[in-house]
Length: 270
Image (tube, rainbow, N blue to C red; front, side):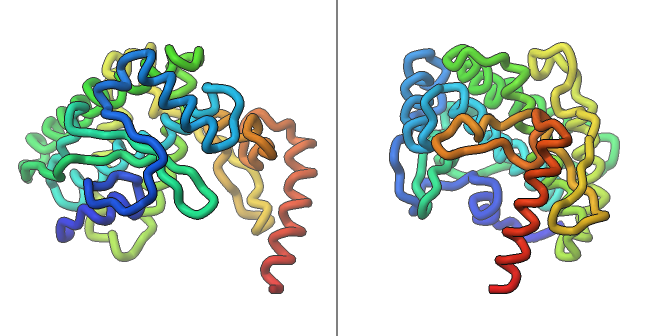
């Protein structure tokens, strides 16, 4: 196991404590966001901060940032063998400003948790229980409220999470500094993928997706994972479809790749 360091969760997964020093533009208690009026106000505030004219963009971004709670829980379970208590009533969701970027962070009143079992069979059940509680009691109310306020399908909002969660899991598995937790992280991630669809309120587990690959514009011959669903960045002022967006036609992606290669090459020479 690795030493417990809750600061890492804020540095990488946007999960912070009350001492977080990022400039706060707007904040709302997570329990209040279950109410349509409060969620609509929150999404409108965030949409304005990212220069989006519609709430659906803000809802998609909110869901993506909320995946940080899921990754943080996986990390705590795997790296520290500790639960991570994240009940709605102890969370505040806030919009923060960092330079030119507006981001969403989840604030925990106080980090805490209990050490898990070490026996393989007992631990698998414990991990399943911890992930189920987080998804059913914390993430699902937020996702479903955001869907109602924005008019988006909840499945589309859940769809924002697997690419981001998978990215962080793969990054940790490939990090030599985390090699000691590779086996545990792989098993815990497998538990997440094995959860029943009812946990998410869906017909299937939205974390289970078939990866699709495209050429990495920075390194021809190398592959890059396509996003699971569109993040709606193109609906922000000055935004465009991402290179890895599944909505792009391959002809459009080729044109974008060439432009990105030129920018990447120019930046490398500076």
